[in-house]
Length: 428
Ligand code: 4AD
Ligand code: MG
Picture 1 (cartoon, helix red, strand yellow):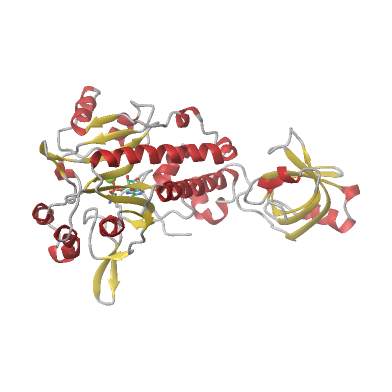
Picture 2: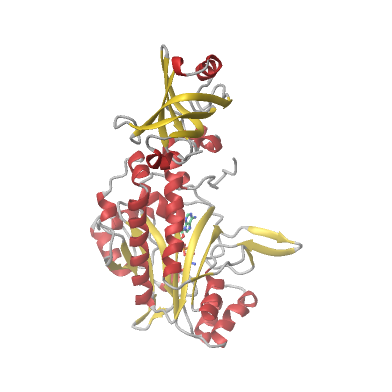
């Protein structure tokens, strides 16, 4: 059995393909099929005179999404999608699908969401999921190649990393626990043990609003490094993001074409990335019709405006301490702001990364835990990292689905993950 994506290596050979009927067109004694096998699409020509009568009957009966086995010689055919086709000398339908629910051209989004388990077979959805695969692997490869160790952190926790308003509560045999919002606090322990680490896992936020960029369950990669300061952290992010984009351009040409994703904006993604401070951003926004007071959190419309000002991803830096997480290191030159940066993706996408230098001073961290109203008891182990061999350290978290949405240029985050979890959306 040969995968469609490898068909070029088998030109002129007899091959067997297994997959599903993606489209079908009948013309008297010839049937044209585009079959898919998950790795690609391939035109198959079925001629009555080349097939046994029972095979020809099956071919006529088999409709969209029937599972099939085809044998024949792979030939180059510049007019066929993918550049090759097969004139079959053998056809078998393993299972004949009747009334494929997604057969019609247009469906409403609600219907597609209810049928997500089938929708992922479509040309566009499968292209997105293949790009997601490349992005995940590129992230891991980059960090592995740069001396980071993968460090898996718990999903059931007691410590809130990113605010207490989006916690999913879990009953832990009578104790109260939460699904992890971020592996960062544990990754900090890892950085002091292994130097440079990253977590990669699902994270959970009980978001209470429905937006095009929030999921309740999403995947995050969080690198964390000891002896890493604010500037080191930003430089790592520039290289990391540029590497990911380059890998997708190299590995997913066909998928990007299926999505009709313009390539020029992606080709511009290389270090260095522009930077703008929060304070500068507030001025710029107010000059352009927004009404922001210093100290307000910036939302999606503000981020979209800012990211549209640049052709590359842009770092938004030095936020007011009170709108960011408790663990962020204050700027020594102005302790009202923190040594943190969000990376906003271009083309209006907005935040894909949040990161910062972490507080390494024990007293200051304790004071912040209190100021933010967190339960000290749960953070004793975290404070230990400042009791025993504390060092400056920094890290960031990149949302996988936000990155996929940007690189694929999608309107909504729901298409970036096989089975999205959104407000009031738990099935399939
Ligand atoms: O900015 P956030 O909240 O930062 C953290 O979690 C830090 N602990 C990261 C770190 O420094 N190690 O989240 C990081 C990223 C965001 O930039 C965004 O891409 C993604 O996670 N994200 C979401 N993606 C989808 N749905 C949501 N509800 C998300 N919330 C955050
Ligand atoms: Mg953030």
